Image 1 (tube, helix red, strand yellow):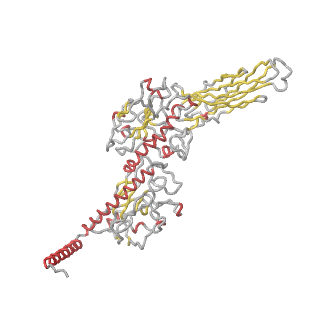
Image 2 (cartoon, helix red, strand yellow):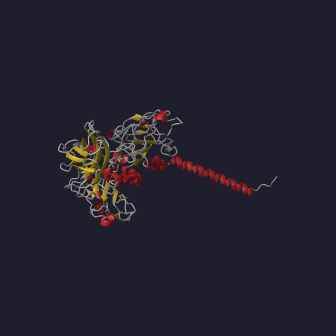
Image 3 (cartoon, rainbow, N blue to C red):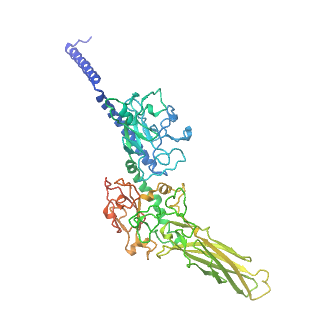
Length: 585
C-alpha cells in the first residue's frame, strides 16, 4: 500500500474548493445578470446564426443565377407541410413531389434547399424567412410564375421602415404580446403565442409583423418597458442581391447574348459581313423614351435596339402597335422594287410591281422564248428585289417561308433563295432579293411546229413579314438568352459599336477604318468592334430608365461619347459597371 502524502492531498482539496468557489461564483454571476445582458449574449449567438443563414442564401442566389431564367430569384420558404417530415423538411416550395405546389411568402428557412445545416436561434427555434412571391416579387408563387428581376427592381418588404428583398428571423421564445396604445398604433396586435409543438400561424413566432403587407419589425416603441417584440432579424437588400449575381450575369451576357448580337446581321443570308444594328439613342431631345428602343442612325452608342413588331407580354412597352399598317416601323419603300433575270433560256417581257404596297411587294412577271425545236419549254430564274426601311435600327431575321410565287396555267414555278443586305442609306434600309425559277410552254402545240413562241407568267409576293423579330428581341423560354428579355436587362445594358460596323459604315472593318473601340483596363483593350456595358444598379437609387447617363455609367470618361472607355477596376462603392466585348480584331 503506497504511503499517503498529506501535502498532495491538501493541495487537491484546495483545488477542489477553488473549483467549487469558481463554479458558485459563475452561477451567482449568471443568475445576477440583468435581462439586458442575457439578451446581449443571446443576440450574439443569433447574430452568428443569422449571418450564416444570410451567407448561404446569397450563395444560393448566385448559384441559381448561373442557369435560371430569372437571375436574382430567391427561394420560397419551407412550407408548413414539410415541417416534421424527415424526407422533405428544409426543402422550399413549390415542390410537386411532396404536393406543396404553392409558395407562401413566409415560413421557415429552407435550409436544405440553400445548402446549409439546420440553424436554430438561442432559444432552440428554427429560423424563419420571408420574401415576396408572385409576379411582382422575388420568388415563385408556383411553377408557372413569371418574374422580372434586374438592377432597377426594388425590395418589396419593409423592415423597420427599410425596404428590403428578404428577411431572416430568429423568433425567440413564445410569450404573451400585450401592446400598449403606442405599440398598437405602430402595428402590433395582442396575442398569446402558442407553439405546441408547431403552430401554423406565423404570428405565434413573429411579433408586430404583417406578412400580408410585407411589413416586419425587430424594434418598436416602448419595447424596453413593455416587451412586445423579441425577434432578431437580418435582411437582404436589392443591392446585395445584385452584387451577388452581377458577375454571373456579365458572364451570361458574354456567353448567351453577345453571340446573338454578333450573328444577327453577319450570317451568310446577310452577306457575311460583321454589321451591328444602330443603337437606340440614349437621350432624345432631353427626354428619354424607353418604350420604343428603336435604333437611331445618328448614334453609335446608346441602348440595344430591341423594338419588336410582335406585341405580347414579353415585348410590352417596346413593340410596334402599328405593325401591319402603313404607320409601322419597318415598311417597304415604294419605288425600290425591281425584277432581274439571273439565268435561263427565256427573257422577261414585262414585270409589273405597281400593285405593291408598303406592306407587300407584288410583281407580275411575264416571260417568253421563240423556240426552234420540237420541245416547247422555257425557263428563267428571276430575282425580285425591294428595300425595306428601318431594318438596321432593330434586330430582324429573314423568314424564308414568307415569300411566295404562283404560276398561271401551263406554267410552273420553284421557289429559290432569300438573301438580304443592310444598306448605307439614311433610312437604315435592307435590300431583299428573292429568287425563283419559272418554267413555261405551249401545251398541245409542240412537236410538229418549228418556231413556236413559248411563254409563261407568274406572280411573286413578298410580305413585310419576311422580316421577323430576332430571337434576342422576342425569345422563347427555351432560348438560353430568354432571361435577358424576360427580366428587362436591356434597360440597364449600354451598347456601343464602332461606326464602321454599323449599317452606314463604308467599310465594315474598324481596324482598317481606324474607328474601333478601346477599353483601358479591359481584356481585350483595343480593336473592339462593339461592346456591352452592364450598368448595374443606380448608385443614386434613382428610378430607371431615365435620361440621366450618370445613373448608368459612373466614370465620366465613359460618358463623353467618344470611342475610348475605361474600366474602373477594382469595383468599389462608387463604381459598378461591367464591360463585355462583342468581338475584336
